Image 1 (cartoon, rainbow over the protein chains, first blue to last red):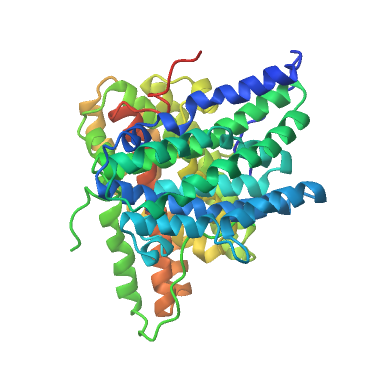
Image 2 (cartoon, rainbow over the protein chains, first blue to last red):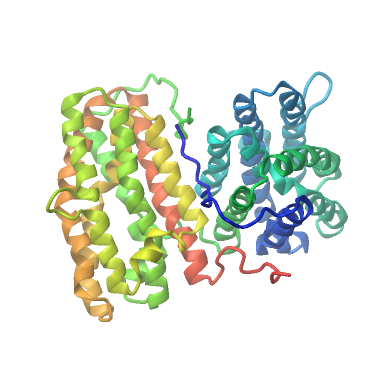
Length: 253
Length: 253
């Protein structure tokens, strides 16, 4: 059994926040979204070398390929058929189905557009340990969480359309060397994230109703923000600081 | 169920390494030990400000407090009574028993010696997300691993006495402000690590006998090296780079 890594506040005497105030506090977490991470800021300003862009695409691919596993773990803890009927769409969006390729395939095309082969994405050779540990923490959280806790942890999608839209707006100008078919993933997620988050938000607002539960929900969302921020910290060390793992070790004897 | 994060090589036609060659390859992993991480190098050279030393002590405490949980998970996957009789000593070493305080208490005294209260260590307020995710990856590995895989992952203790001895040799000179009772942990681990690793090494050398199994064992040890290195990467970002999580986010509205 995996342990939940998010701390539950003790029951409190404080009155619950009204639903709209709780929602406002969830949305206020956007202040800590990784859109403000220096790696993301520089990436969006066009300041990254191709090697750093490729590093980001290859590392973020580990997140992409982990998401359907995370969502399967969420469904494995959910006995509510109606909820599963909605949630399964997330798996299909990423894995694809029938005629549609899905998000993982779209990300492989982004890889191609920035000069990464499918093979080097799929074999995970570029994935940094710090990125792997952060993504695995998210997947393991979903394994141990109730459906409602997991739904709450997905609420960073509240903030995702802005980050995707900025990439669509800026990258074609600042990175003319990236081929246009690379942008399908970001375009696709604009509408998907908006739809997914409606469901996740509704579940969260309805389930966490007492004050200590609402505070717990904010902690869960903070945990997910920590995952996203830590991924970029590891990439900053490797690609901006020129301190990839083991850079300072002696040569092989 | 947690997934194992270490890749198993496919069966190979290559002959197994003789036992001494396998042991040599395990020991050669010392080249990638975190003793070579710039954070550790500067710490040992006396170049860290008190705030960075305190950051390291507080973050490393999360590792210390997770180790007995990791070892309990290891024992929970071990049906061999003789092996458990040896392994339980690790839990006792950290948690203490009867008249002896154990490693966690010794680390709290190290905290006191560098100016950290027990409360701020125990409530984990200083623990960085990247450190937490790396340590949790190690604990979760132990939950999912066989006893022999977990024993193999503990083999970084082959390299630990050197790092503890260096601290004992250098810190009193370069950090005169640290009180002497802080060093009990390092002194205590010198002998414990040497004893523990004999058992772990014997289990590993006896269990992983085919070539692809030996390569798998090297991957497991590499995973553990990744854990230790990633912890220091997160501390480097926060305390050396002055880029702690969320440093670049807008002020609270």
